Image: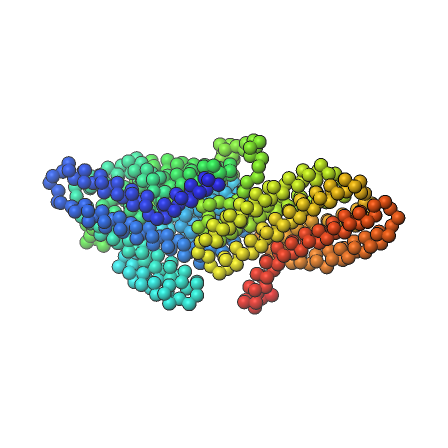
Length: 606
């Protein structure tokens, strides 16, 4: 869990804009040193430039974060359903990865989701490879947005967004307002950065530096280091396009920097895999491998790639020359190069996704569990997703399945062991409840962190329902652990024995109840209304079995057998506890049934 907290801190630092601003601050410290080596250049007020660039970058990053958060809340539920229902079609995975990442503006979050699905067995590593490639395409949307020269409309978008937030009567309108306002702030920040760099157009030392960046190896190295430090390829591309808007870099330099940004963003995946399961490491290995091999393949063909990008990009009017022409054409060309590179790499590698999956499994093989790893720990909860409530709540459902597997095992094995008088086996089964308790506390803590975020009304309701579910599961575990062990010890101490007919009656009831819990857990994991209704539909049959068992016990009470009253007491208590177990299972799925009924009443569909 500590690694997740570290990554959460890293993400918080990045969202605050601190690390990108530090990167620009280093650049601003270096430039005056270059100025000292050249005394013939026009004086530049570095203090004003620093304030302009840092302020513009802060607004840009804040707007990007606000837009991403609004998109998560507006489309978050649809996004998680799309990923959860992903089929084995690799091309569908590519499209899904691009769409989801374009929405949440973070390939890292998409990668974290993939790790959970692969670990849960809901998605193979081969499928995940396709989604990773799509995620790399989705991250290019930011560069495409900022390359549009609409900075003059930035404050209009800010004003419209603010009006929607201020006057919106429902949560959805307010979130759309946040989205529009965030977009306006992105454009506004870009405009400020671009204007702040205007004095550099006549600054010879900077122009010489940018000419060196035109060397592909130098440009790739610079952008790789910069992106690795700030943990955001989108921020790197924002700075690159801000330079291009002033005609300060050529397309060749922009392509080199874009390729470096693609490699540098792998650092995020690498950090996210530290201390995580082998599946997480494999996803990170796939991500890094794609980027490095892709850049290596493109590097020798950069001159041809440059010609292709120019051919597919808009051309400025012929009257523009020099830096003015670069400023008019290069931003869109760099954005197109960034997108074209990621699409090309995806199309090249997608047919070989099976081979890449096997390669990653070979590089990161499974390892046997050590004695220290036998102790249970959460499989799906990830701190990096706490900031995205729809995805975090989906992870909780998966972890409930993990917890429910232990409860199902306890229920399946403890009652038969009790009926056959296997006291030691029951004691071993009771130890499983310790694992149930550990997972319960972890899920409860995770939901507490999610609950402290800004939730929509539907997300708050879902969180409340999941709390009910984990409480019911934990109650079932405690009921089995406490009562089965107590009853078994009572039978062993008093040498009590049940008749074969009674054992059959209790086994039949136990089979039905255990089945209801198993279906209930499955219904919660998949939010399946049909499975929920199946559990609710079991009520009449289980009630009939309970009534039949109670009548059987009433007839058995008068039987001429030793310790009949004591045996009767144990048997009746066991019937009552099994009935309570079903009550908990029914309450778990009623949260799903009620939610479906409320949605149906709104849409008018039954």
